[in-house]
Image 1 (cartoon, rainbow, N blue to C red):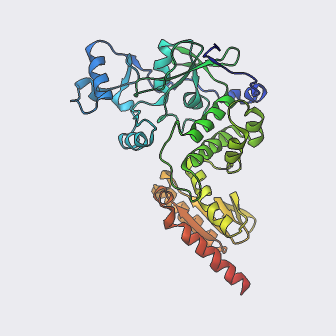
Image 2: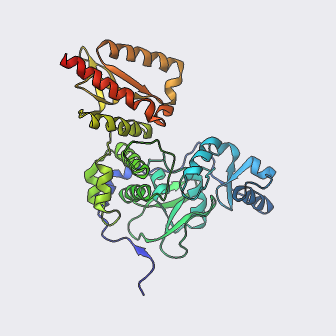
Image 3: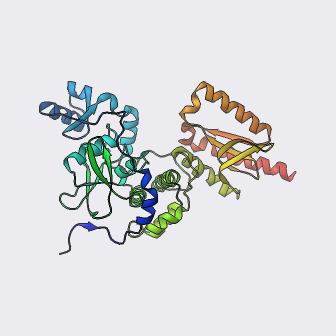
Amino acid sequence: MPDERTVVVDYRGTEIDRRLSHHLQGDDLHRQAPVPCRGKVVEAAFQTTVYPSEPAEEFARRFRLASPDLCVPAESARNDKLVMSQGEAHPRRIKYWVPAVDRIYAHLSIRPRAVAAVWSAAMLWGVPEFSDSADTVLFNRGGDKRVARHSLEPTLLRRDMTGLTWSTTLWDLQVRVAPPMMTALHCIRSALLGTHRRPVPEVPGLDPDLVRAVQVADRFMHVWQIGPEEFRACASPFIAAGRLDSVLRLADAGAESVPETTTRLQAVTVFKGKDCAWTTQLKIRVDDRLISVADVGCVELKIAIFYDGEHHLKRRQRDKDFARCHEIQSAGWTVIVLTAGMLHEPERWLPDLAGYIDRIRARQVG
């Protein structure tokens, strides 16, 4: 009978990994490491976490468990509304109240030979956007193999990582981490297979899991400044070439945030339908001065699309954005500014984009 352990063979990312090694992160000195909790407080907090319908104990009001043995202060916990929303999208409806960095520390404390992997490793490699709502994932050379059943368990996978791991320090703990390119490919694969899901706006014509995978690829490409060729060079044996290509055809390193990826994917459905050439990170110049950079747009038709995140709500930033928009429009551009709410309702703005394209072309012909 073959060994049940899954051994990593034919890994091709070593040289690229060396180039990316400076992205490996360690502890956050501004935060306290998870602290031990013992006895009946553990039992009470465990019961409250796993069976939230039960009455809450005082401990559970003041602390959140990262594992059955370690906890963090309640003020270090994640935002309640975000946890609930992301928990509903999780494949097993698990709600993670404690940040990923605290959970990986807690679980590696009792499994020092294990290796931080997939979404847990992504956080340590400088791509944390998806990790807080994802399972804590560990590679084990042997021992248990399981999928997390609740927020206090890690997902354990059998992998022999001999000679492939990288090391960093989390507070007082030396931890081993899966290589960066292996991590990125495992995360893309996880998104495609739906083993981790988070809420994602609709993109007409695209499967939601594909949208998630493109968001993941965009973040790795942008943060690490790598392109599709690095992914293709390392793909075997982690992900089928055809499935990876379906992601890379849509990916773009220019997206500076997850919402910007969604903005591009939604806009491109209209641009392609109208046979328009489109550009990401479109530089807009007036009198040879760089005025702004649009997230996506069409130079030929002078259409510029911007996503405005939360920082744009501040008064000084709003005034700056208004002046920028006025100058761009005065130069003959059509400007579309999107918010998070509009991305979740593409039917509110995609018809407007299609209408702008038709009217601009009609004027050009006339």
